[in-house]
Length: 129
Image (cartoon, rainbow, N blue to C red; front, side):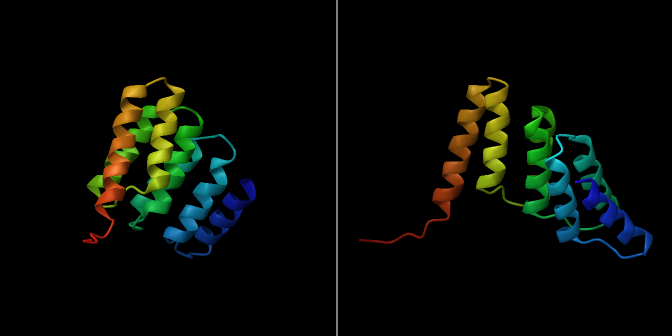
């Protein structure tokens, strides 16, 4: 993860603008370190740089927070994702459900599981028999 940050910082010094792919890669590399602050810092830098985030970026940031049990941050990101009109995917829901499991919040986990099921079923094509 440190090498990924060095590359990312070298790009910035050479005035190479990052995009969603480079930010997502840097955030994902940091997730493995267990230091949840660095991925969130990169996520915030992305927003300040006016780079449009995507589901992959949100999922990486959610994963960073989930790994260390930061439920409040996970749900802030989950809400922010909806505010930015991005649909949570299975990975998003799994991260949110996992942080609920770590905090023994089974009621919230059940709500998320129901939300995930509704979202998935709403995408299924109607096939009259």
